[in-house]
Image (cartoon, rainbow, N blue to C red; front, side, top):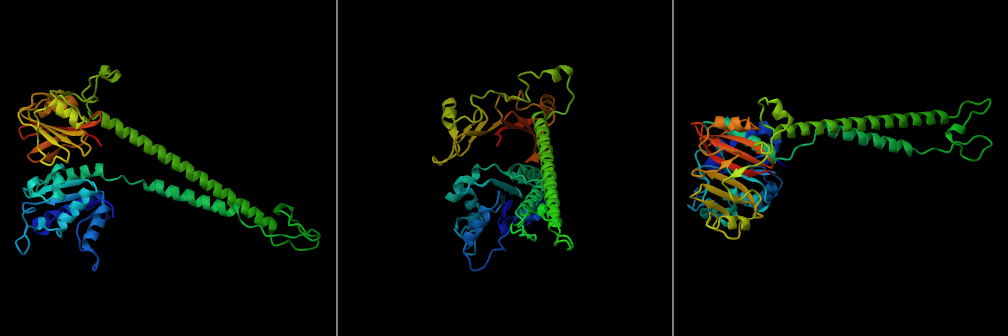
Length: 405
């Protein structure tokens, strides 16, 4: 199994998980979405079965409802504390294997607190979550689909696969024909086995069983096999050229998301500080991919939000509205900016309007989506993604700067 694994608690969010399954199945096919444990074989270790199923997925969605962490069994023990809890087993397996895990908050649930989680699930709080609301289900689920498309491996074109199969078949036919066994055709008075062209009928006798005809047929089969191989190779090359052109076009669009017309001066030479092509972080003393030591030197008073010293730190500058998040390699991968941050990203500040955003950067590279009570506008800038969250009044309330994969 490969694709999307939906992890959920039946007595917490079964309805929303089922609804989400149907939506994802339409977007990615039912074979790419796994949701339940009903298919487990009896008589086998269920922990090993779950671990094996999770190990084959590309991404795991942890559907978290209001009672996800507080659910209890028939003995009033918290389910999450049990090493036989399906939810815990699946999540721990994904986190241990460093499989992408996306917390999906439903029915008003909030992210669990690290101190309330077992040790093998504490890393969950460092995964960025998304909210899927009943009242905005379609928009929220579509935003999740968009995020998953960037994570899931892209499938090879069926055309390329069929062309490759045709080329292999042609090569097999050509090889079989080339090594076709040539039986010893004996001509009267000649004890050496002649070649097909040397065989000639004896005067007054019927033609031999077609040595010349067989040689001609073999040559014809060889010729057709070679033609088929050449055509398959030409078609494969054309398909590859078309794929490369499509990829180049996609990259050009991604690099310049603005669809607004430009002046002749802008078309001839874009300025070096064009906000669409170079990442501008004003008011920050660090940049993406800085090491944890470098960031601590820049912000020695920053408080850590992670109580486990063995894991990457998440630093927070409460007075400045700056939060810094790190990868497992202790590299700065995500910057979150809220009020009272006074700096600017791409020349835009907290409190600027959505019109300022589109005027400065053009249209986002994807349709803006609802996130909590805000609407997210995302732009690809250099080697990062910059996201502006705009509130219902049309003002920027949060800015994310995220390291591209």
